[in-house]
Length: 504
Image (cartoon, rainbow, N blue to C red; front, side, top):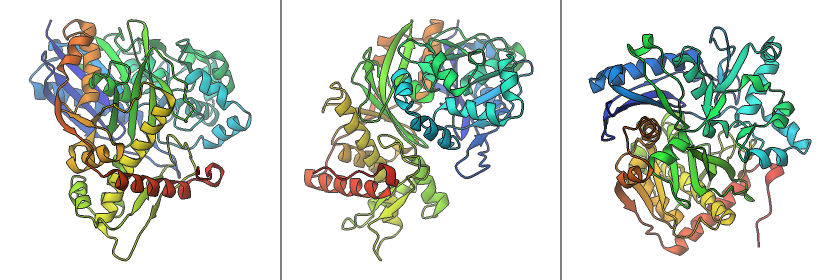
């Protein structure tokens, strides 16, 4: 058997496929963007059929680029945008509605209703999550309520629901397998992460029939075999993990206390807490980092909704840059005497505030403020938000020590200026690996290790290689002043119900 692995990385704005060889080197890839649909304010949807088409076409492109055929591939690993959910017909495989994306806020009224009923503590205790439109459960409930006849059909067993990985597995296997992994299940708002099972009580509250939901498996497990007609030969699917969990694996964060942060459209930081299920007192999420060989490893997670999207706003919204790569160079030229703060609450604020009603704002503008100051404020906002997450993690768990080193990946980490500013604001080292495709690599490792053609955990961890370590180099008084300014700006941005007086 060859050591070639095909990794499917189905993201928020594009689908990618990468072929890795037996030495875990990228030898072929394909990528294709797909449409974003905004049917109403705060609503975000994807066409599942377009996602499916882009996945198949990019897999074929990756195989061609690698000069390989399906018969050369030992296994497929899948990683996906989390929380985005699809409901489809069991008989035909056709979706009954567009996929509702993780960024979508349409279920905010339902979340508020459940909070007023005093149910958030129950959901948090069982799932580790908060009642927020971000998660899949309320999205499923919305489709069952709003799509004509959907609830009755679901109760009759005619419909299936799942995150994007489940939809792809169903399609790839020709409708033979309805499954997901523990990491994706842990983001649905209806999965008990302590018992590792769908929770009947939470399903009843949201009105979701259990028979709609997929079987939950380990991250490295048997997810069936692709239909021969798709790629010319059958391929085993042996690995699945949500994108942030796959990145945690790809960064080899296998030991408690290790932390990674991915800077894509949003920013997602995961801190490995091992077998310790830490219940956050600072509005972080408790989640399943991964589940291997039946053993669950937990993590604390902080979710930032706007990271790279702030750079996209600079480019596409206010048009102060032509390309995303220009942001760091422009920020470096900003006037150091101006303190301009951008709170990028374009779709609300995530952890640790969880304020769905907050909206973006800029503070500290003068007549001399220009594109450079806007660029610096946008990039610094990502560093400030990451610092908020790290502070909360340290309060929640003693394993998040002052010696914590952050491993980073995602599109933004290519900017040296941004990574140096991140280290300065965190007052902690930031490690950038030689392989930045950590999400796809994590999914590939799950499949490759399960297939027996890639190394096991310890050997894989030893293969992680550092490209550059960014060490903090900012005066403590400057850092302190910047953080105080940031926190003041955030307080002024929060919706009235969440504004708290500053601690004295």
